[in-house]
Image (cartoon, rainbow, N blue to C red):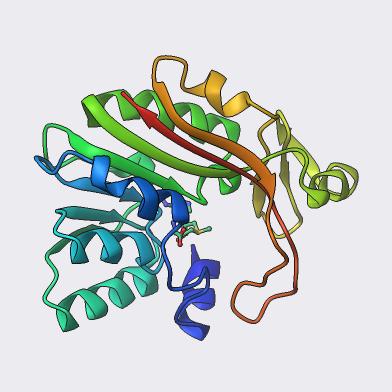
Length: 214
Ligand SMILES: C[S@@+](CC[C@H](N)C(=O)[O-])C[C@H]1O[C@@H](n2cnc3c(N)ncnc32)[C@H](O)[C@@H]1O
């Protein structure tokens, strides 16, 4: 996790300071009776947005630097956010269910086993009508062919480079097969505009977006 500590330490909004558009468009459909779980909350752009809009939020993030940055902004704006500084494999929910689970930018950095574990665990963390917000990368991504060529294949369309970094790509429409029991409120697969994260190189992603209802 040290890489994220380093990345977050050197830039205050690595993935931008705005929440993903699908959350802005659809957050009003989240039932506010129980908190929202933001898995891999990063520097908190989604947790903070929802807390500002009156939702209870729990930010699950292993990076100490990320958690501290969220805490600082939440305290400054008197926003009540709960924190779980841990890996999702160690996570213990603190409520019976979450009204929504956010999985933004996480599936592409998990192994296939971790993705399977996450999907199974989710059934214990949600209730009927909970929403699940997801972004992930597809095999249409330009980096997919490069990684297939140069990195070690560690699972289906999943690669590990020499530094240990994992990138997992979902096939077109595979996201719907991973969550077969959920109702689809939004599903889109597209090429993003060129952009960069922090001081990183310009690039674009073959992005998958999904919003599902349990
Ligand atoms: C690409 S970033 C996305 C951050 C945030 N969701 C956003 O969209 O701005 C992925 C985040 O997932 C976290 N992460 C990585 N592996 C994780 C794991 N096994 N369990 C929980 N979080 C993890 C990383 O520390 C990182 O902050």
